[in-house]
Length: 225
Image 1 (cartoon, rainbow, N blue to C red):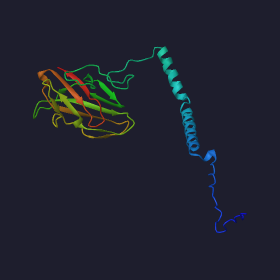
Image 2 (spheres, rainbow, N blue to C red; image 1 turned 180 degrees about the horizontal axis):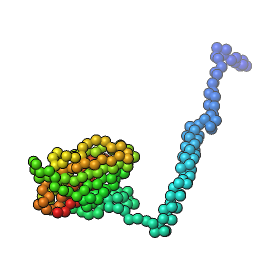
Image 3 (cartoon, one colour; image 1 turned 120 degrees about the horizontal axis):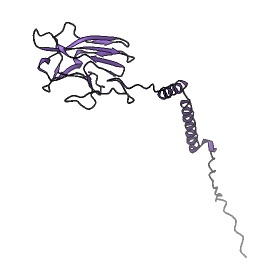
Image 4 (cartoon, rainbow, N blue to C red; image 1 turned 135 degrees about the vertical axis):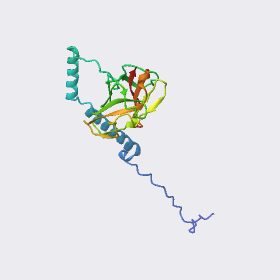
């Protein structure tokens, strides 16, 4: 008769370690929830800013009403030569040979107002001819731009009937326009002369071209003899 077998005491029972499942984060700590919350906050902030900017301006409303009333009463005025129209740019009242796109041309003696600065050039007259024949114009600059501006004799030139453009001369008058700065509300007047004989006849155009890099147009005063 077989004897029952005894378990081998040399063998140790095997222990199996089971890894505990990872602890789940609350949904408000998850990345997708944080990103969504940030987006919602930004949308609310943008809407709040937009609502604030849409509030009506009483002065603007009153200005609109006044403008409408003025138009209804027939008080609207036509723009003066060289003044601004609805586009905000000065307008030409004449033209000349060699005019470029963006130039503003008026007849000699008229004024041109651009960005609050009004410039007037009188009709050309014969200047002092001690050294050479000269033609001079009296230029007046009025500054109502709200800021200080520069002015310079070198900003003025003249287009001759021959088609050449000459710079201003240092001769021809004892009251030459100089160079300097002009505060808001200030004005200056002086003569600008050129080596030219207007007695020969033809078209002479005084051209103002600011030295500023940001200038987009020239201003011109046309003299026909």
